[in-house]
Length: 120
Image (tube, rainbow, N blue to C red; front, side):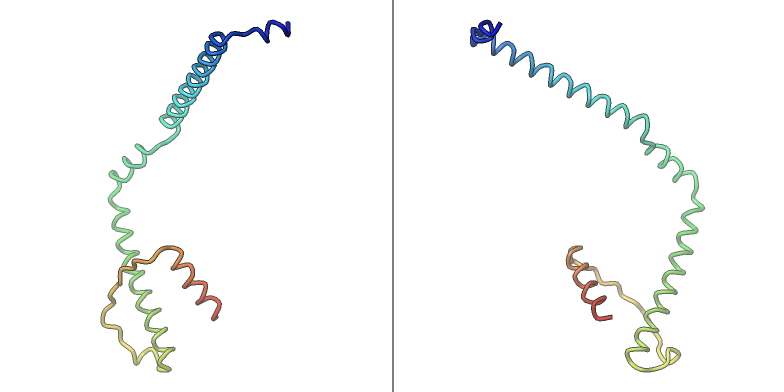
């Protein structure tokens, strides 16, 4: 038996190699189709999109929450400026707020926050 293994020719070895590679790639293709099928069966992206178009009332709620967030932001900024200036918050009026676009990375933001938290 060991002698038969030792007497394998180059062409027989290539046939075994090509056949083995064919089986591996066929298995990978089957796995791809199975995963694609799972995505179609269990992922409900279409239902989420349909639900968003059916309920416009939620958009109104988010606008109200946005206005409340803006009011809260003004209150927080007023309190912070009053504290820094050593005045009462009733003496300070914020007329407008300009948001500045930040071109910094997440790492830069994290570094700044870490420095601020270390000072507290």
